[in-house]
Image 1: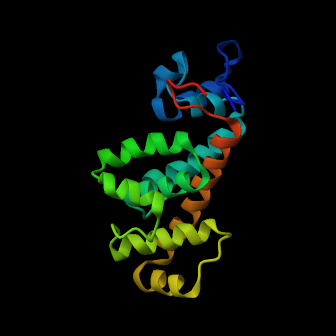
Image 2: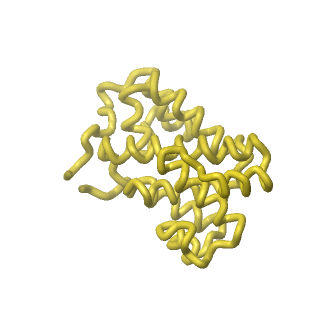
Length: 183
């Protein structure tokens, strides 16, 4: 595939609802000039879908029981599993800003088998992988989760994995390109 399957929304089609999508993360300037994000410019084709989806993502990124590091671990593991280059590119930069090491970032490609992970991270990655494999978390992993984490925390991990998987699938299927890169 070369080029996006669904291109960023052209300026002559910007509606007030599309501008709400542009401004969701970037504020008033994006209402006028469009988003810097190809994801937002693509989602603007369907504001009625985009805005509630973005609200759910906001929960996982800002309002859940997950730390910023855990959230990045989930999104990067999912991005790798589903080949979402856009997600991987944007979130590796953010992971570095959070202080994740290059060994940890590369360890997300390998998963729970990578020796870089301490036990708590192993548990998170097992939960992510098993959720991504049809939602069937095995009894041993579930028992370990239930022993260490609250029910809301377990629910956040399961649902964040599902949310970021949905985002990965959308980005890949729609062919959303990393800003500044073609095909």
